[in-house]
Image (cartoon, rainbow, N blue to C red; front, side):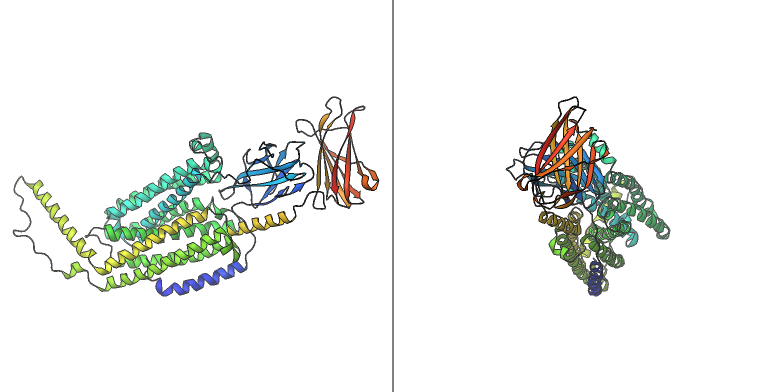
Length: 630
């Protein structure tokens, strides 16, 4: 509820549009919430020969487990070996078994992006020609099942607990000091603390299964919990629990020593509580900012403080609104929430809305990057829904302002009524030895009088209208918080569009290897017959077209380790045109690796690549494969 918002709504909307336009017009590349931007072989590609490895390139650094990338043959059997490697930047590779037959292969991956969210996907490529496969290409993400739903619900509950706890305490300190003694307000703030604490513990337990298997049975796996504690998200959750201990002390002082102070003493204590409470609240907000979208992508050093301020503004507005609603409905007649408190909250709420506009515009620019992302991505669509809910909330707040103004102008019904005369004989006269009975009668009369005053207060049409409008605001706020929670788990529009562009570029260039589109890779098993004479020799020819080419040769033993052999020779033959054999003698680079540059391919066609491998003075063999070059 915002008393002073209505006259300034148009100004806020114009400011929002102007700043948004300026920011989006100058958008620069960024990423968050990792997405697959490229692969080798490409998605849907058909290669002539079996590759030795599969490479995946993401939009940002990711966390990978030993089982993060799986390559399955047409029958669903795994053909990858070893854990994924990170040779450079954001590219991750996994080695493949040698001698793979023709057919369609499925690459499935499940990783964790740097902003804490699990990312899963799958695609296919084919060797020789596409074939039928028993593997489904749909990605089975760990967050798709019940664990994902529980984790998402836990995030929503944690946000709600934070908002209620922080906003309720801020409302008491900044707007309604007498509220520290109202039992309903105390229960609300303590419930927020309990909710946030329980949700944080639940998220800590769910995190391991959420980012790996998605199995309910793994929730209490202590080894997974140990792994989680070593991650950035685990550290953030533990930090949140430690800060909640400090928040418990703050709440105890607010509803204990602070409530018992006189008005003059309260003013002295308010400043200290406000400073301490702000520090604890900012630390709690930072536990989200340091591990989610704000910590990755463009300008993280600016984005994280902005995210903290944004969360604090949300808590001050929506949490204060919830506390006001509870006070209007549950505050006792002798401690009503007055017009002064409502007006002070109006000013606090307006400042929160302005803060939300400024920080929200920056976050939107950072996560969207273009106008088209508003309607063309799920993140943008959710953001539009959030903006719409905020507009509705502000519109309802303008109605609340009118009820507040009327309430301030009209005297309360209780004040207009004549004071009820005391019962005949005055208060019950306690006889000697009847003190308990007298006290009980006094409490009953006080309760009756309090109920009468509350009925008179609630009968005021202006107060009734204010309660109804604030209740409507709170209802919209619940939906708004749910949309915000989903938004924090959604891939940012900027990243989604970058991934789509990369996938489009990949598909447009994913023609069969060896037709002028990229390097040719040939894997050829050899056996010279002598001791240690078995292995696999791999030939890479890049760019596999007419003119100059670079040739690399790799030799591996049966265990997949690089092996040194005395001599390797290459010969290229185009039988259809009677060209060749053209000899190539590569130079040794390192153990198991030879290369040659300036290899001339005079004509396109189906070339025979022969490799002569000599493992001793008398043991050698020649193996060959055909490749379309040019």
